[in-house]
Image (tube, rainbow, N blue to C red; front, top):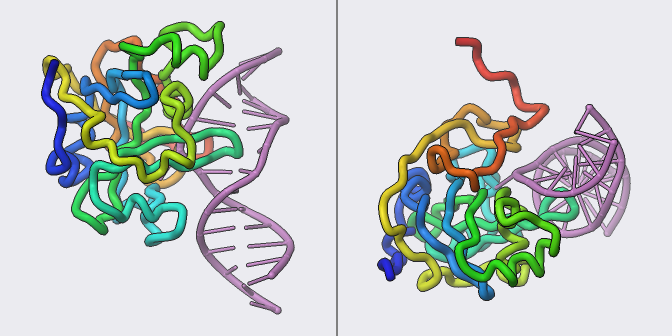
Length: 196
DNA sequence: CCATTGATCCCCT
DNA sequence: GGGGATCAATGGG
């Protein structure tokens, strides 16, 4: 059994925490996932929910590190973040994808009986659904639920997904050559990447 | 490619 | 207090 990550681990810059979360495991509601893909968000970041300051929805992001920030989007999906940085920093790491390593039956019960193992948590809303998270889990303390990985994986970095602003900031991190990373899709309305 | 879906937030009155 | 745009996505063609 590997080490639990303490609150100090999360209480740093989200861009530093994000890649270190790869390969770690997160456990909730009878399901454990090995994290394969994340994105960092910060208050000084136009794509962050915290960019325009604290609101009722984003209050948890401005609280102490190590707590879960769950939001609802596209009228049908939940996504989950781990709050990072100093209290009041408004930073977090979005959990984008993972491999269900324990509780496959529970995850499949939430995601659907016909869902392939690979797709149980491959995508931020899929991961949140597999973990059984919704707005009632907003603010849950995740210290004690996140463990270091057995070994440090090979990490790649690139632009974030699904956003229209700051789409070229390389704050998306994923494990190289891992089947449980979500397929990359730039937001259709994001400006095209600069030509090489 | 495209529809789905509704909470949230901005910016006015 | 209200109208309208937006949205860290998914699933099905």
